[in-house]
Amino acid sequence: MNDTSSLNLAEQYDRDGFVFPLDVFNQTAVDDMRAELASVEKQPDADLPLKVSQLLRTNCHFVLPFVTKAACSANLLDKVEEVLGPDILIYSAEFFIKEPQTEKIVTWHQDLTYWGLGETDDELTAWIALSDVTVESGCMRFVPGSHKQRIVPHQDTFDENNLLSRGQEVAVDVDENEAVNIELKPGQVSFHHGRMFHASGPNKSNHRRIGLVIRYVTPHVRQSGAGGYAIVARGEDKTGNWNHMPRPIANFDAKDLEAYQRIRDEHVKVLMKNAEGTSTVYG
Image (tube, rainbow, N blue to C red; front, top):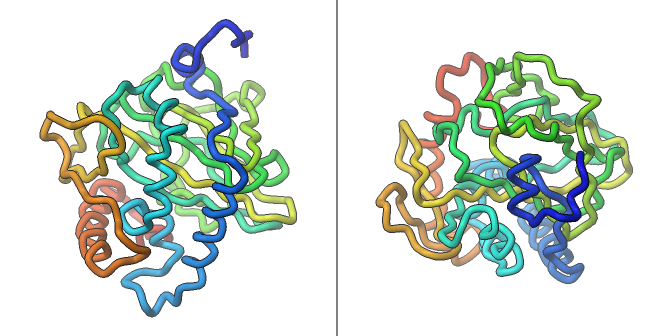
């Protein structure tokens, strides 16, 4: 990449399609989130409508207050606002966890391929590191400037070691020599664009690689094929494009879970449209 010392956050994001590392959460906040996650992971699957691992991978901001609290952190939203402006909605949230010494990967892909949001520039993904994220532990890799092109053809693999919902990967060549390793310390955050080519390798380290991923949109974005559901993080929405959901009140509250199931069913129709395999994320 070229020198970034003279660029502000928004300019660097526009040029490269990503920006990192952003210092957002202190160690106490990270420890609190790790403790909350550990508590949630101990909850028996039998007590819930889906496996805990599935709930953590799909729209967990609707059912876990600590996730929504992190997504609405003023320190984080101040930086999101520099890119998206003052009106910010939380579109989705999920954990990407790689256990130590495992082969789980993410193939080269563009996030916006299956979301039904079109080719929008009014979307941003914040990737929050809750552990040391290194090349050894399988950090993300970005190809600078790849967000400047449109969405390219993808193919589904449904590979069991692929963390993506369809095992999707771009059906074009990627010059991996151009890729940048997105190494982060606990509490640091990276931003990336939904058309950014990105991937990550297996976790060869002896610790869990934990990322909390928050996806933000502006109210002007629309989701095709399903009702859009979001939580207002900052500002307001006067467009009528989204169904506004309340912030969750307790981990896996029964009322929140009922709404979550409805939203999940609609999202699956969009995200798995024309899929010919079975997703380990959505079932």
